[in-house]
Length: 239
Image 1 (cartoon, helix red, strand yellow):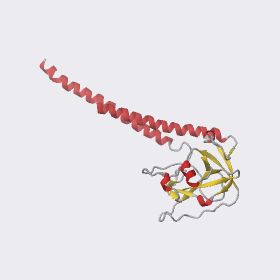
Image 2: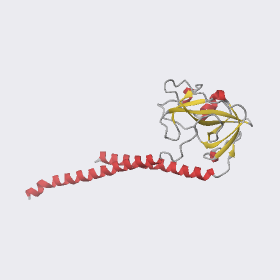
Image 3: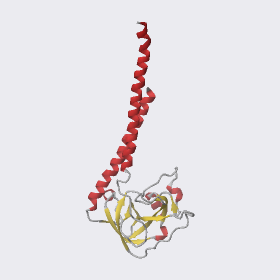
Image 4: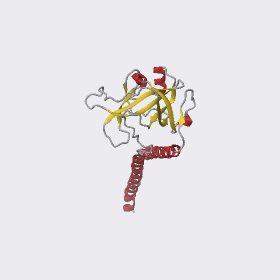
């Protein structure tokens, strides 16, 4: 009985967690849709409070520091329709007023035979204007306890932490990431996954967990009923 109650409690908790993840994604999609109609916010050095910028349409002017480009490995194509592995391309943008912002420029397919053989993409030189969505952090993939700081100095990495990267480069980096949407002629794919991408999957997982909890309840009731009949059987025969 105790084990069954534990299973019910755990599966219900997991079901609620999956529902929460689905609601987070659908709520963010609604927030992005509402913010998309507002004019872009210009990024500038010294913007310490970036919380109001998250999910906003933002704009930055400056020049790319191409020598500090980082490629994040094992990233699927953002729209979820391409199974090929690839890289997310990140490059700091030196703002005209002296600050910098890390730009998530797009997706680049990976060579299936040699991951270090990077497909060429145009290097943007000179001042550019980049628009996109402000993110609170660089999207992460699961890594077995890998500390992003341990990959400092590498061009190809699994994950990157904004604060650690700012310390590594010594750059006055804004604590926000610009997910680029404008085309700057570099050939990178920028059909990013929608904010509610995967919400249906979370609802499906939640249904499975709640279904398992319901099945456990049914089994407990049935087994309890059978045990009660078995215990009552000899007494009835004696009478």
